[in-house]
Amino acid sequence: MTSLKDLSEPSGGDQPRRRKTGGRKKGTPNKRTKKAQLRADFELYERGGIKLARDRLSEVMNFFAGLMDFYAPVRDENGKLVITPEDMAEFRSAADMVVRAATALIPYQSPRLTAIAIAPPPSPAVEQSKHVTISVNIFDDKGELVDRSEQRNVPRDDLPLLIDHDADGVRQEG
Picture 1 (cartoon, rainbow, N blue to C red):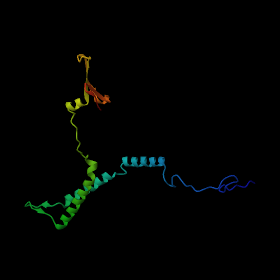
Picture 2 (picture 1 turned 180 degrees about the vertical axis):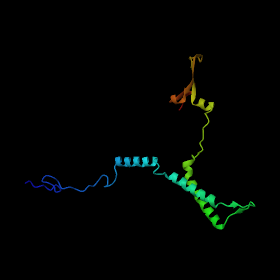
Picture 3 (picture 1 turned 90 degrees about the vertical axis):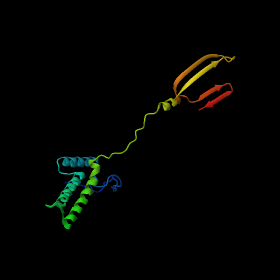
Picture 4 (picture 1 turned 30 degrees about the vertical axis):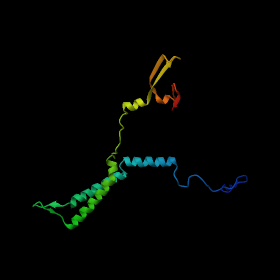
């Protein structure tokens, strides 16, 4: 008869088992498990089994609004408002809860409007300053004009260095 070997003990060539030192802790769900749980929660929500916090908050606000209406002062046959001190205390408490719940619900029910500034289109003068006109006059040794050339609306960014030659010398701008 063959004896069964105890597999929990390391065999001849095996190294003793060490404790796990890295990775996910025991019991922590992996990505696949998390995704499945989120999908199940969403399906439960869609079927009406789970309500979002804003829905619960809306219910609380409506409940306290009903209490506020119930404890609100009423007019008697003479048109005078009638309310007991106990009813006034309940009315104020319910009104406070309505205000708290409504304040928390505002971001979910109404979009936040923020001011934005729209820049006006640039004026023609500003547009012209981004472009330059290049004029070239060529004179002979007697000072008479031989040739003239002009190029308009050259983007200033295309000109790395402007050189202005004149009779007195060379002036560089850039």
